[in-house]
Image (cartoon, rainbow, N blue to C red; front, side, top):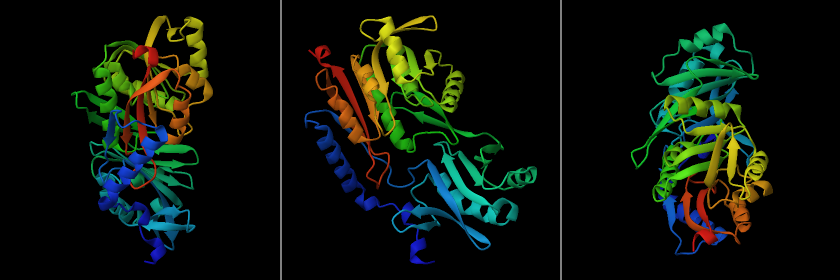
Length: 374
């Protein structure tokens, strides 16, 4: 195989991991101006088989095809034979699945991409993506594949999908406190990509609230499918989670119902709507009357996208005694923290290495109002 087809995009570098992580930590400390005395948690990732999601292009060459990723610098595909970066269940499935698909021309014809999503329990959801409509004959052929019991298959084409078993994996994580958290990670929706790091993030939030008096209510923005909501629900009489994605809301509701978590309410509101609702209900802007209930919020958790918080959301969060901010972009986090310098102090921080061997890093900070720290 030519040099340009080597599997560089799936390589891991365990011997370099410690130094790469140290560089990230130093960058975060400098960017956020964190004092050496500040409690700082550093969450290390496994150095191999850490990624629970993988998306591969399918590159056809004559009668065969290869898993591929695209090299943006060289402007060419990189063929993938093995991938020690992804979860072991995905890595072990790559070539056996390819062999069976190649053996049936119907399953390989117009195959454009293959997405994988795994859970810590060994489940793998495989989505076969085509540039041609899916037929009953296609579904019969897919159902006849001989794969491990925990592998589930589905197809997607032009906005339509065919699900053979289900379109999600069940992700259950055991926290240090003994709490067991079970999430639904739905196909084509956001989920935390590194299960080991996600567990450490949840532990970090859980440990903080375990040291605090029980909250009457906590507000969560950008709740997604309820990842952090599970922890918040253990430490508050009520949690109001906001999320605009119908798919994420449905996944969260199903998971909460299955676990009989009944102190979480989900509001399909953006931050501007939340801000208005809080302002109407109290002078402090942290009390909400909604759906016949009254919530007095003592803390807020935000987990925004890479763009960080907009001006309205920064102003909203500034009202709260306690702010927990989970950020996938230290640059926008630094900008947002700058808006709270006069009112809040960082009391704790954490670096979560979600994406080893890249420049990306996840950061968590906890802030208290300055008058609340005296």
